[in-house]
Length: 103
Image (cartoon, rainbow, N blue to C red; front, side, top):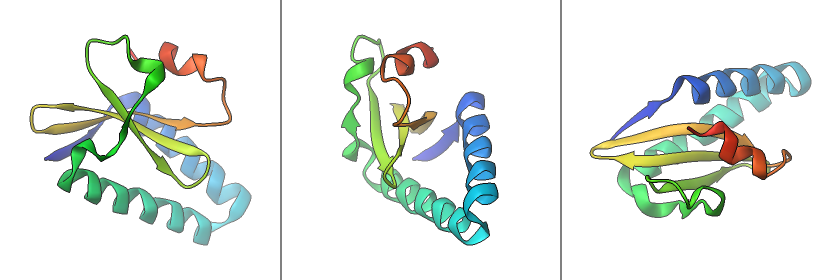
């Protein structure tokens, strides 16, 4: 399996990493990125390990999610031999907005 980030997901990742570094420092940023890399490695081995995302159940594709730390969630779907990262979702946001962000 290969991992591919959508433009939106990559943009959110960069914004999140920038915020973490500004507010909490480089060490916390590195820990966050390390956690994401570890989770992506696990997803490559077991892509169905994430739970089905209930807010996106009405979609044609099945979206799954996996937690990154306490407040972020990677939203992804499986397309053939690709894990497509659709979004990095901050759990402090309104849940209904997630459905609007994923096309």
